[in-house]
Image (tube, rainbow over all chains, first blue to last red; front, side, top):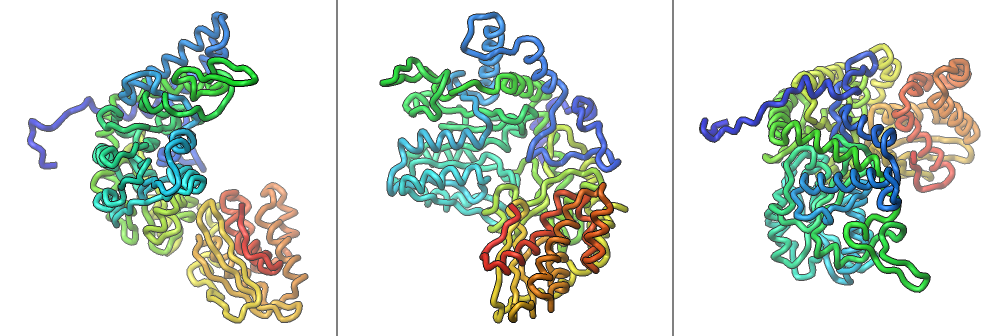
Length: 417
Length: 153
């Protein structure tokens, strides 16, 4: 780093050893070896406070929410709505009613496609995504375009895994209704310039959806600063429970959108002739939600914020730089995705060894990584490979974890030499 | 590494490095494409049937060492066999790689008639890899039955 001394920020450094002690699963062994968990991009492990939070709900005040007048329902409803406020602050949203609880980022994107999309996209219109997207940010738009006779456009990526912004801007046009991009690529780790993308999308008269599933654990998010219309993330990637996530939507857009699923809690009144919809956010939250999981998600966010988002980002950046150097030095290894602006992901291929075999042998060393197409087959096609091995980083990882990965890769090469 | 060596036996590594019968077969009268959507492995199996006998077998595709070696050794094993013999072999191979590892006797039964293919007995200890070994076989069976496609899902 060539930064001037006075420009170096010094966030309080992360006490990684203390962080690790909070994760029960990190204390376990796999095939007799201490677990080295490098698969947080698929799903993060959970700290004890999150595990306890969910149990605490069931042991002390579980009830359905927004329903009863009894004490438990009041307590549960209150905790659930405090969780909404926590997510609102986490995302930098102006109002709590702009936060909708869903099952995860996938459901969030489908919600936008099926409500805003079906209302606003017609025959001959266009939806623009990028070549970096996860299947969850491709398929919902394909389904919408097919139904409406619209066209899905894809902004290409370069060899490093960076979206070609000139092409992106060239693909925006008067028929573009929706732009949907990942904040951080799950397969490659590329950080997209979402503020600039938002500005260009708005200039073209389109709304922009940001898939933040991979960004939320690594970057401080501010939807107001980005200026985006929708922002989706999943709880399980920010150390929270699986099966819960959130969608941020600009209030004016959410109010104009039709509901998605019909049912209890989302109505104002129901007769057999006609029903009217509840106010935001309840209009989009039909049925009994994941009450305990949502409350535990707020605890996970509070826990992550307690570590210091800057300290976490600095730690993961340092690990990414260390891992990049370490893996680059291995003969026959090629990193896939080398964008200058990256977060949390080391995707790679090895000469003469299929990623599946890498995964099995590393597993025997106690090292858990993801192998395969990472639900991003078009990204794999772009590089002409069927799959990669992907090590992904979290706040609890250490240089020793990456050293174990490198040693494991050595064993893979030994086996296949 | 001991268990790993059960999976990655030398003969398997050899076939994965130097797969036999790895070519397209223009004269094939049966072929099918196999795909494992979980990991992206793809294999095309070509058969040349003369009456009831498999005269030639080959394959193309991209996959891990286990699926490549399995396709290579399957091709070795099938040449000259009758369709009925091939079906029986399919069942035995399937039993071998999917058997419960605690039922060693079942495995012994299956492996005694499998000859060289018995080296895949270690696969059943690795549930995530069973589909790698069985993909070429499912694809071959689809080709025999005239289906265009086989999938492990």
